[in-house]
Length: 212
Image (cartoon, rainbow, N blue to C red; front, side):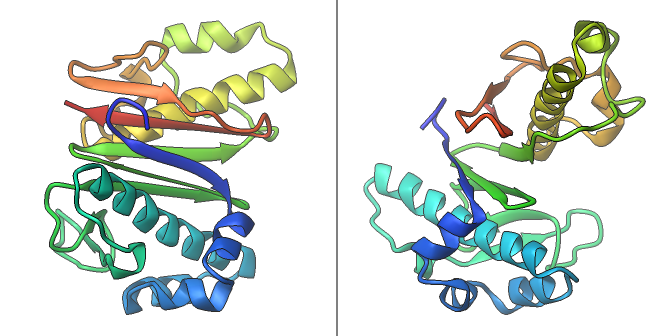
């Protein structure tokens, strides 16, 4: 638990194993979640999706337990609603009937992450791999800070900045249009917004952000 948020990074395989396998994990999901998973072409992507949606229920249940409300993760219903179009099959995730709990989830190539907090939160995870830093993503200070690093170190440093930015965006405190102006090297990139790197194996980077 960090800054009042429960945040977990795990492998997809570990989450699915803990749930009793893929079939048992899928049974925990709402129909729209299973339908979204089924639309993914690769089985590995489908597994990542299912594992992330299971993990976010587990961290939400842990947060509720801290407040004295014991609830099984399998009894929590994850819902999503788009603030733009009003659709209920995409948008920011939430736990149905529990307005005081905010959640966020992420998955990428065999890794998943999930967070739950009493205020807006965002989480992101990325495996470390060769990547060309995207134009218009880093602030001038961030770009200068990684420019002289060797290739491997630069990849990891860029992805660490990227996950921190994604986590902040997922809180709703910034948008993708703000990325180049958002300097996330410090603990508080915006007033009232805190961002932290999460403990993870060296082959992956992850970050969580909270508001309030």
